[in-house]
Length: 410
Image (tube, rainbow, N blue to C red):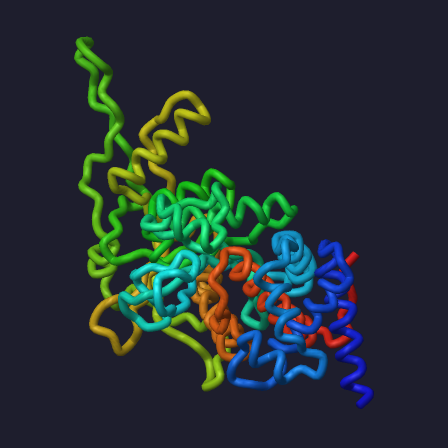
């Protein structure tokens, strides 16, 4: 009983702190009630089901708090992030997206699109998230609901679901950069950004991280082309007539898969990156310095150099190419590009590239344990309120696991 009272007191302190921006006391009380509902046992975490399990549960009050109440979820998420980042001490921020299968076409931002939860095209919502992670703990910091193109000019559905006028269609990689810009405005910055190939393959996403001076370790596909790190552009002699020729790399860039094959299996060495539930996690890796090529990548580098210095010398920036070739595989299986410094050990590149596993743990806990995908409302505000409340519940549980008697950071 003493332990239960201690946890209740800890939750009350947590709610008082993270919901301090919510002006009305009764709304903060409903927030406390909703969080308890999310954390209680029970397979379904809809408002109706939670209200039935809570001794102080009032379905109408909870519905109003989540779907109609005008409280702003952004300051709540900010306070959660401000608490959790110093508590976790993240090794990286991970960018990813998560899907929510839906029936019908009236839930906010729903569309027939790729649904990761089902592994196929299906009717669903998709959200982009940014997480602070270590191998021991993690927590979502920010969310962006992806608005498909078909919703951009659908006035009827936008009005019925309450989508703000400024919330139009933006690519997921842009939403990820938007989220990191907001986090930067809160005084938070990542040690390094990690993402899968859905983001890392995009030269504009990588350029956006470079422009923000954020290091990254992002997955790419095997067809990404690069020049060797030692390659240098050559400027052809000028005849004296016409425009001066631009500096160019003489050799055709290679796909990263071709570089791996050229290096050969014997060039890969075993690296262990963490201790798993069944023993050490290890595979074989090779890290090389390369210069990402491709028309789009080249243009982005040129634009950035001209904007910064007024000209471009034709040199593509060097980054790490990390490749994985498991012992029992016939060919390399995974590739990453990283802007981390040249002196970074291969083992550190591997550890960071592989740290994405942690947010799968987040998604499982938030979906299966905290009802992230159980929200039955249709509105923009309701979705953001629910996701923020689930984030708060997840943060509280993470805090309690790490430091059962944690107090508000100064």
